[in-house]
Image 1 (tube, rainbow, N blue to C red):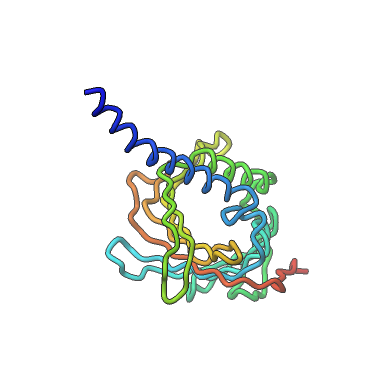
Image 2: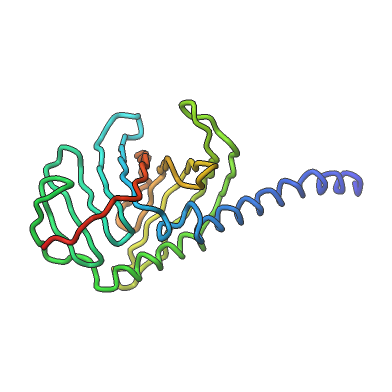
Length: 212
């Protein structure tokens, strides 16, 4: 019996260490790495949404200079939103023209975003480091994990979370593809199996000016 237990421990220990190492690797990406939006360079992205059966639902178009300076909207939806810090505008396209809208974001919006990011790092579970994956002829380092935010007492204890699978360029350490599903939140009764796929295109010259 002792020999059997020893054998089981020998088999189990490398697997446990590997899981712990992977968790640490993913958590480290939240601090100045690929999963840290506060150091991510300016970029454009498309976010294609499909239902659980794979049917197209909608596609979001986004320009992102920083987490606090972006413009986004639904392709073909006729309305885009420009957000700079806690100020917001609406317009018919990614280029406007822009009309000032009432601010729906709290004055401490930037601090809330940073707090949510830290909560997601702290709440990481089921991390998987999937190694190098070939997708459409390109190689990516792929990680997968589940996380969520904490309830926010200032917003009726709102929280949200999902499973994420992230494809990272091994040469630049930048996110190139981000898949999300298994969405849960305080404002939805059931888990959503909707799938969102974000494709990133980096542009160091991308600037989103403040409307006059």
